[in-house]
Image (cartoon, rainbow, N blue to C red; front, side, top):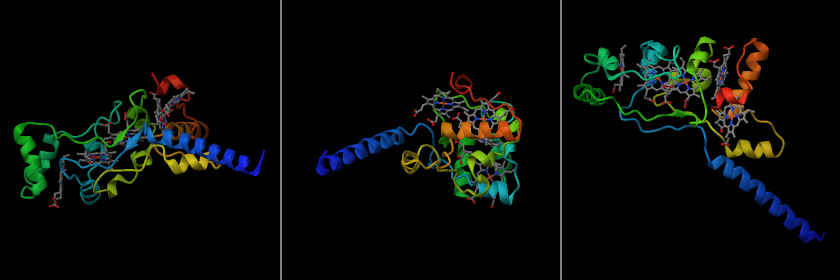
Length: 195
Ligand code: HEC
Ligand code: HEC
Ligand code: HEC
Ligand code: HEC
Ligand code: HEC
């Protein structure tokens, strides 16, 4: 091949690699996006300053697939009195008055074809923060998760960066590790997570 031919082949190869990386990345199958919430709920205030347990509000986590969100009534248990004059709490009282649930925007999400149960993880004592980050410090829950272009490029050139949270590699890597180090039986077969 001529020198120009080799150059052209390299450019084409690079273009193909970039195309695959970008297309894998842009599908964004699993996400945790920061979002504008109807009420600006500060986790840090509730968890750190007032020592409210995660599972007081996310009470379904230990017994079901979902962690669940607290009802308006649960919030009003405190906020009928606490900070009742603050604008965000007035919004809260409005939902309570109309007996409407608060339309929270979902942050963490795996695709529909994936089965993720909280119960098994909470009972195996995997801390919420292992998967969700330091929520107790957050004024707005958010995280950087899902496929990342930088990671895909590193994989392409032979490095093995840790898989980002909420990707399949992340689930499977922890399951392998837990099975070896803690003698657990976390599933590695496709049908347990996909059915
Ligand atoms: C006083 C009640 C309360 C406490 C205590 C609380 N949360 Fe929350 N949590 C909420 C509410 C309300 C939302 C929905 C609004 C939002 O996303 O910020 C939420 C949202 C979340 C989300 C995002 C859910 C989604 O949409 O994907 C995660 C993750 C979470 N909480 C984890 C935790 C963890 C971990 C703790 C303990 C360190 C905790 N929470 C303590 C009320 C609470
Ligand atoms: C166990 C009691 C308790 C519960 C339950 C609770 N909160 Fe609070 N919340 C507090 C306290 C205490 C503060 C701090 C008030 C202050 O600093 O004056 C606070 C502060 C807030 C603030 C900040 C107010 C401001 O502007 O300074 C918001 C917003 C809020 N809570 C929303 C909620 C929502 C929504 C829920 C239900 C998901 C909830 N809270 C459940 C006790 C509670
Ligand atoms: C092993 C990782 C892992 C652990 C541990 C974990 N979560 Fe989750 N959580 C996830 C994933 C993955 C999702 C998205 C699930 C989906 O889309 O079906 C999620 C979703 C959520 C949601 C929003 C949807 C729902 O289920 O209500 C909340 C709230 C939440 N988690 C809170 C918690 C709390 C509180 C704890 C600790 C008691 C916890 N999580 C422990 C991985 C985890
Ligand atoms: C421990 C749970 C778990 C196991 C076991 C598992 N998966 Fe997944 N899989 C996931 C999650 C979570 C996603 C979504 C996030 C992502 O795309 O990385 C996913 C995504 C996928 C996708 C879509 C990828 C894409 O880019 O859209 C395919 C295809 C797939 N899995 C096939 C398989 C096959 C085949 C097996 C068995 C060899 C398997 N999975 C085992 C959790 C799992
Ligand atoms: C930080 C470690 C960790 C991560 C990350 C993790 N898991 Fe697990 N998973 C576990 C452990 C530990 C168990 C419990 C095994 C046992 O009971 O012995 C488990 C169990 C399960 C089970 C079996 C439930 C049952 O009822 O037996 C499923 C399904 C599962 N995980 C799916 C997922 C999916 C999907 C993801 C990614 C979105 C994920 N896990 C991420 C540690 C993890």
